[in-house]
Length: 307
Image 1 (tube, rainbow, N blue to C red):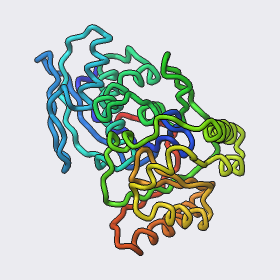
Image 2 (cartoon, rainbow, N blue to C red):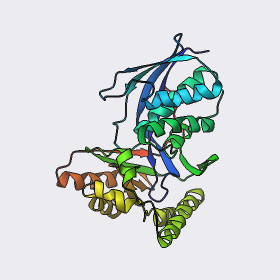
Image 3 (cartoon, helix red, strand yellow):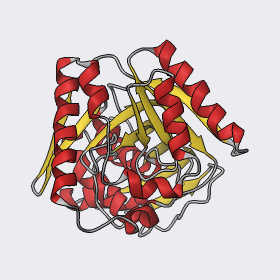
């Protein structure tokens, strides 16, 4: 049995427009890379080799919190040493904390002989999300662990459903500003008018149906968020300009990735996704906001051992 592993966990897009806290999908890149190994101390020891400042106290680090939840379930006192090698920029809106949590529990599970399935690991990785944002949501950690599109049908009990999909390409643009997930959640309205709720339910159902049936037109019609996006858009300069540019360039739809500030668009082919990237990038360049843009097919594999 291996005593150490290098693990890669991908970035993810959560909410997917209409699916707040229940829909997400995995990207091929960027991602988190870490090295995990057994130690004899019976504790979790953390080292950071990334350019970002990370909490190294096990009580505050998302990877350690998730890993400890898994060890508690196993009633294990096994120690691990985790070294963070590369990192998604924190606060970028593409599942930075989720990738860290997913990589940690996946790596430890592999070293321990796979006592849990990937789906079972979601519950432990969620505890890392709770440490990061105050909410144990799964719409990032589920696709990070399982790959592809995932639906969180229920949180109590936890019920994660993989969703098949046709070829879909994501364009993501990350303006170089930070929006903290905890802050972004605080501004959301606690009550929703029933008319808006019904419209949102229809879009969620339509998006899932479109993915199952390979219906790009239905996917496009359903990629609309009438509840969360209008509030969070206020935190992202030029959001609606960028969104319209993506649609005009041929995207199926465009919305905020997770809590922002990244913006994602979905396209049915790679060539269109690159055209969309150019259009979105120009929108931020025009107002002098530095940004990083990338195109990725949906990652069907999720977290993996890196050779």
